[in-house]
Image (cartoon, rainbow, N blue to C red):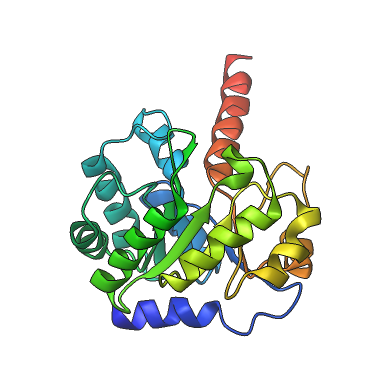
Length: 241
Protein backbone atom coordinates (compact mmCIF):
# COMPACT_ATOMS: atom_id res chain seq x y z
CA UNK A 1 0.00 0.00 0.00
CA UNK A 2 2.83 2.43 0.79
CA UNK A 3 4.15 1.98 -2.75
CA UNK A 4 0.71 2.70 -4.21
CA UNK A 5 0.35 5.87 -2.14
CA UNK A 6 3.73 7.11 -3.30
CA UNK A 7 2.88 6.30 -6.92
CA UNK A 8 -0.37 8.25 -6.51
CA UNK A 9 1.42 11.24 -5.00
CA UNK A 10 4.03 11.18 -7.75
CA UNK A 11 1.30 11.30 -10.41
CA UNK A 12 0.34 14.75 -9.10
CA UNK A 13 3.84 16.22 -9.27
CA UNK A 14 5.31 18.29 -12.07
CA UNK A 15 2.22 18.18 -14.29
CA UNK A 16 2.73 20.28 -17.40
CA UNK A 17 0.06 22.78 -18.52
CA UNK A 18 -2.46 20.94 -20.65
CA UNK A 19 -1.46 17.54 -19.22
CA UNK A 20 -3.50 17.01 -16.05
CA UNK A 21 -3.84 13.67 -14.30
CA UNK A 22 -7.11 12.18 -15.59
CA UNK A 23 -8.85 10.06 -12.96
CA UNK A 24 -11.94 8.24 -14.27
CA UNK A 25 -14.54 7.08 -11.75
CA UNK A 26 -15.36 3.36 -11.56
CA UNK A 27 -18.47 2.36 -9.64
CA UNK A 28 -17.86 -1.40 -9.41
CA UNK A 29 -15.20 -4.05 -10.03
CA UNK A 30 -16.04 -4.51 -13.72
CA UNK A 31 -15.83 -0.82 -14.58
CA UNK A 32 -12.58 -0.56 -12.60
CA UNK A 33 -10.99 -3.39 -14.60
CA UNK A 34 -12.10 -1.83 -17.89
CA UNK A 35 -10.50 1.49 -16.94
CA UNK A 36 -7.29 -0.15 -15.75
CA UNK A 37 -7.03 -2.16 -18.97
CA UNK A 38 -7.51 1.09 -20.91
CA UNK A 39 -4.26 2.30 -19.41
CA UNK A 40 -5.30 4.81 -16.75
CA UNK A 41 -2.59 4.92 -14.05
CA UNK A 42 -5.01 5.59 -11.17
CA UNK A 43 -8.75 5.76 -10.49
CA UNK A 44 -11.12 7.74 -8.25
CA UNK A 45 -14.44 6.29 -7.15
CA UNK A 46 -17.46 8.65 -7.24
CA UNK A 47 -19.85 8.53 -4.29
CA UNK A 48 -22.81 9.40 -6.52
CA UNK A 49 -21.95 6.71 -9.06
CA UNK A 50 -21.59 4.04 -6.39
CA UNK A 51 -24.80 5.22 -4.71
CA UNK A 52 -26.71 4.84 -7.98
CA UNK A 53 -25.27 1.37 -8.57
CA UNK A 54 -26.32 0.33 -5.06
CA UNK A 55 -29.82 1.77 -5.37
CA UNK A 56 -29.33 4.83 -3.15
CA UNK A 57 -29.65 8.55 -3.61
CA UNK A 58 -26.39 10.46 -3.57
CA UNK A 59 -25.57 11.31 0.03
CA UNK A 60 -27.67 8.53 1.55
CA UNK A 61 -25.44 5.46 1.05
CA UNK A 62 -24.78 3.69 4.38
CA UNK A 63 -21.10 3.82 5.32
CA UNK A 64 -20.74 0.04 5.44
CA UNK A 65 -22.07 -0.29 1.89
CA UNK A 66 -19.81 2.47 0.59
CA UNK A 67 -16.66 1.03 2.12
CA UNK A 68 -17.57 -2.46 0.86
CA UNK A 69 -18.03 -1.09 -2.67
CA UNK A 70 -14.71 0.77 -2.49
CA UNK A 71 -13.01 -2.42 -1.30
CA UNK A 72 -14.38 -4.35 -4.29
CA UNK A 73 -13.03 -1.70 -6.68
CA UNK A 74 -9.63 -1.60 -4.98
CA UNK A 75 -9.42 -5.38 -4.93
CA UNK A 76 -10.19 -5.66 -8.64
CA UNK A 77 -7.24 -3.60 -9.91
CA UNK A 78 -3.54 -3.06 -9.31
CA UNK A 79 -3.52 0.70 -9.89
CA UNK A 80 -4.00 3.16 -6.98
CA UNK A 81 -7.60 4.04 -6.14
CA UNK A 82 -8.83 7.13 -4.31
CA UNK A 83 -12.29 7.03 -2.76
CA UNK A 84 -14.97 9.69 -2.48
CA UNK A 85 -16.30 9.23 1.06
CA UNK A 86 -18.44 12.38 1.10
CA UNK A 87 -18.24 14.03 4.54
CA UNK A 88 -16.81 11.04 6.34
CA UNK A 89 -20.15 9.52 7.47
CA UNK A 90 -19.82 10.95 10.95
CA UNK A 91 -16.84 8.74 11.72
CA UNK A 92 -14.04 9.88 14.00
CA UNK A 93 -10.90 10.70 11.99
CA UNK A 94 -8.97 7.64 13.21
CA UNK A 95 -11.81 5.25 12.34
CA UNK A 96 -12.35 6.92 8.97
CA UNK A 97 -8.67 6.52 8.09
CA UNK A 98 -8.55 2.90 9.21
CA UNK A 99 -11.65 2.01 7.20
CA UNK A 100 -10.23 3.62 4.08
CA UNK A 101 -6.96 1.75 4.50
CA UNK A 102 -8.78 -1.54 5.15
CA UNK A 103 -10.71 -1.00 1.91
CA UNK A 104 -7.43 -0.54 0.04
CA UNK A 105 -7.81 3.14 -0.86
CA UNK A 106 -4.74 5.34 -1.22
CA UNK A 107 -6.66 8.60 -1.00
CA UNK A 108 -10.01 10.18 -0.29
CA UNK A 109 -12.31 13.08 -1.14
CA UNK A 110 -13.71 14.90 1.90
CA UNK A 111 -16.30 17.60 1.32
CA UNK A 112 -16.92 20.74 3.38
CA UNK A 113 -20.71 20.72 3.22
CA UNK A 114 -23.48 18.61 4.68
CA UNK A 115 -26.83 18.17 2.94
CA UNK A 116 -26.23 21.26 0.85
CA UNK A 117 -25.09 23.49 3.72
CA UNK A 118 -21.50 24.69 3.97
CA UNK A 119 -19.62 23.75 7.12
CA UNK A 120 -17.73 26.26 9.21
CA UNK A 121 -14.36 26.33 7.40
CA UNK A 122 -12.21 26.62 10.52
CA UNK A 123 -13.99 23.76 12.23
CA UNK A 124 -13.69 21.69 9.09
CA UNK A 125 -9.99 22.53 8.83
CA UNK A 126 -9.48 21.30 12.40
CA UNK A 127 -11.22 18.04 11.49
CA UNK A 128 -9.05 17.69 8.38
CA UNK A 129 -5.97 18.20 10.53
CA UNK A 130 -7.11 15.30 12.70
CA UNK A 131 -7.58 13.14 9.61
CA UNK A 132 -4.09 14.12 8.46
CA UNK A 133 -2.62 13.25 11.86
CA UNK A 134 -4.37 9.87 11.92
CA UNK A 135 -3.34 9.06 8.35
CA UNK A 136 0.23 10.32 8.41
CA UNK A 137 1.53 9.82 4.87
CA UNK A 138 -0.68 6.76 4.27
CA UNK A 139 -3.48 8.66 2.49
CA UNK A 140 -3.68 11.40 -0.14
CA UNK A 141 -6.35 13.81 1.13
CA UNK A 142 -8.36 15.76 -1.44
CA UNK A 143 -10.29 18.55 0.31
CA UNK A 144 -13.43 19.52 -1.55
CA UNK A 145 -14.48 23.17 -1.46
CA UNK A 146 -18.23 23.48 -2.04
CA UNK A 147 -18.67 27.25 -2.26
CA UNK A 148 -19.46 27.09 -5.98
CA UNK A 149 -21.95 24.27 -5.43
CA UNK A 150 -23.74 25.58 -2.32
CA UNK A 151 -22.33 29.03 -1.60
CA UNK A 152 -22.19 32.38 -3.34
CA UNK A 153 -19.57 31.31 -5.90
CA UNK A 154 -17.09 33.98 -4.82
CA UNK A 155 -13.60 32.79 -5.87
CA UNK A 156 -12.04 34.72 -2.96
CA UNK A 157 -14.14 32.72 -0.50
CA UNK A 158 -13.06 29.46 -2.15
CA UNK A 159 -9.40 30.51 -1.94
CA UNK A 160 -9.79 31.39 1.75
CA UNK A 161 -11.24 27.95 2.51
CA UNK A 162 -8.62 26.22 0.41
CA UNK A 163 -5.82 27.96 2.32
CA UNK A 164 -7.22 26.70 5.63
CA UNK A 165 -7.46 23.14 4.31
CA UNK A 166 -3.95 23.14 2.83
CA UNK A 167 -2.60 24.46 6.15
CA UNK A 168 -4.44 21.59 7.85
CA UNK A 169 -2.57 19.08 5.71
CA UNK A 170 -4.73 18.53 2.63
CA UNK A 171 -2.69 17.25 -0.33
CA UNK A 172 -5.06 18.64 -2.97
CA UNK A 173 -8.02 21.03 -3.17
CA UNK A 174 -11.20 20.43 -5.17
CA UNK A 175 -13.40 23.51 -5.79
CA UNK A 176 -16.20 21.48 -7.35
CA UNK A 177 -18.41 23.38 -9.75
CA UNK A 178 -15.96 26.22 -10.32
CA UNK A 179 -16.61 27.82 -13.74
CA UNK A 180 -13.72 27.39 -16.19
CA UNK A 181 -13.14 31.13 -16.44
CA UNK A 182 -12.21 31.40 -12.74
CA UNK A 183 -9.74 28.49 -12.78
CA UNK A 184 -6.68 30.70 -13.52
CA UNK A 185 -7.58 32.85 -10.50
CA UNK A 186 -8.02 29.79 -8.30
CA UNK A 187 -4.76 28.34 -9.59
CA UNK A 188 -2.87 31.51 -8.70
CA UNK A 189 -4.40 31.66 -5.21
CA UNK A 190 -4.30 27.99 -4.13
CA UNK A 191 -1.14 26.20 -3.10
CA UNK A 192 -0.57 22.63 -4.29
CA UNK A 193 -2.52 20.41 -6.68
CA UNK A 194 -5.90 21.57 -7.97
CA UNK A 195 -8.67 19.07 -8.75
CA UNK A 196 -11.20 20.22 -11.37
CA UNK A 197 -14.50 18.63 -12.36
CA UNK A 198 -14.65 17.53 -15.99
CA UNK A 199 -17.75 16.91 -18.07
CA UNK A 200 -18.28 13.98 -20.40
CA UNK A 201 -21.23 15.40 -22.33
CA UNK A 202 -19.18 17.67 -24.57
CA UNK A 203 -20.61 20.78 -22.89
CA UNK A 204 -17.44 21.77 -21.05
CA UNK A 205 -13.72 22.13 -21.75
CA UNK A 206 -11.70 19.00 -22.42
CA UNK A 207 -9.27 17.72 -19.78
CA UNK A 208 -6.44 19.19 -21.86
CA UNK A 209 -8.13 22.60 -21.84
CA UNK A 210 -8.80 22.34 -18.11
CA UNK A 211 -5.12 21.57 -17.60
CA UNK A 212 -4.19 24.67 -19.55
CA UNK A 213 -6.47 26.67 -17.24
CA UNK A 214 -4.72 25.35 -14.15
CA UNK A 215 -6.07 21.89 -13.32
CA UNK A 216 -3.55 19.45 -11.86
CA UNK A 217 -6.03 16.62 -12.08
CA UNK A 218 -9.48 16.10 -13.57
CA UNK A 219 -12.23 13.90 -12.16
CA UNK A 220 -15.72 13.31 -13.52
CA UNK A 221 -17.93 12.43 -10.57
CA UNK A 222 -20.65 9.96 -11.63
CA UNK A 223 -20.28 10.93 -15.30
CA UNK A 224 -19.07 7.55 -16.53
CA UNK A 225 -21.72 5.63 -14.61
CA UNK A 226 -24.45 7.85 -16.03
CA UNK A 227 -23.09 7.51 -19.56
CA UNK A 228 -23.03 3.73 -19.11
CA UNK A 229 -26.66 3.81 -17.98
CA UNK A 230 -27.59 5.82 -21.07
CA UNK A 231 -25.76 3.33 -23.27
CA UNK A 232 -27.70 0.51 -21.65
CA UNK A 233 -30.94 2.39 -22.25
CA UNK A 234 -30.03 2.62 -25.93
CA UNK A 235 -29.43 -1.12 -26.07
CA UNK A 236 -32.76 -1.84 -24.40
CA UNK A 237 -34.51 0.34 -26.96
CA UNK A 238 -32.88 -1.75 -29.67
CA UNK A 239 -33.95 -4.97 -27.97
CA UNK A 240 -37.54 -3.75 -27.76
CA UNK A 241 -37.54 -2.97 -31.47
